[in-house]
Image (tube, rainbow, N blue to C red; front, side, top):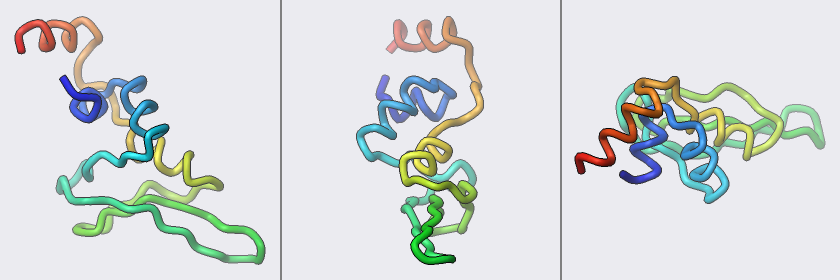
Length: 91
């Protein structure tokens, strides 16, 4: 099973690996492509978020790009670790 699928199922370790690699998982609402957005509000401060280019769902604002990516990539667990392991064994 790929890290992307694991992250979408709520595996936080997979989400962290993807974040460290600079990968964004698809939008949780529409499966659209996402990108990081930087906004300057008071010089030199910059705030960042991740936004879906299709439905405009966003991660909220963060101080660093890494924090915004991690928030976007982290999903609530759908399956337990044991259930994910069973899925991997059956594929």
